[in-house]
Length: 280
Ligand code: GUN
Image 1 (cartoon, rainbow, N blue to C red):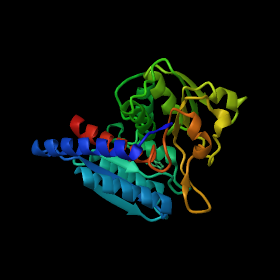
Image 2: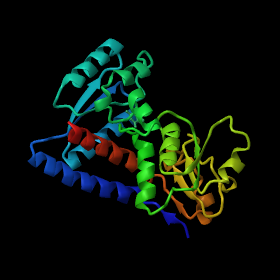
Image 3: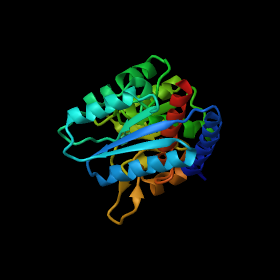
Image 4: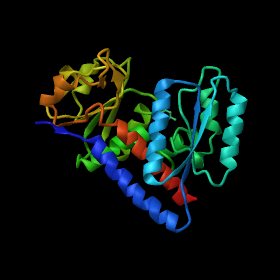
């Protein structure tokens, strides 16, 4: 029987720990504050931003919300970020991605002070991760590591295969697994014989962005499978990159979708916000 890795429960545990920390920091007169910027009307982004604000409220992190129209210029957005960079009361700045097409996402990410970049997207933080220095780490891959650790799954010496090489998930995921002494392979759309490469994995992290693509043909008996994907199917239900029903009987542990990696992303964002105020 596969163990279900319960991201909902583990993320709640983390949020409760952070809530206690927030209360003790408040007693010292320190309050975390996250500025959340949303440009445009993307419905999925609105839901994500709403969930981030709710998590802040639960923990006791103040959130400042900037909901800007689609027509906002890049200069206007950068000006707001500059203002927030200079505001000592703001510890974290998050610009929900994607931004509208007329805005250069890379320029936006670079404009956020690395010390307030709680998403861990700034090149300085990405570079720090690569060379093992202190810095903010991208929340989804950090959440995957936390899920594994809190589920008692050891990474050291294991064959870890990551499918996907995005800047936000795949690449930092590979580096984090390496940092935990895993033996890491990062696969992508040009990988030859993807199924057999995935079959090597003791720990398989799927971040491909294709609904239910990863079936039992990609999986070694007894592997741990972490599903980063989230997709809305035609019947309205959510599914991941992994065909859960197809693989469940052959894995040792697996994350469900929803309720696996998703809630961990927000928990790790909150953790980064708390670290930011502790450093301040
Ligand atoms: N859009 C999708 N995921 C994320 C995330 O983790 N952070 C931000 N800022 N935007 C996103």
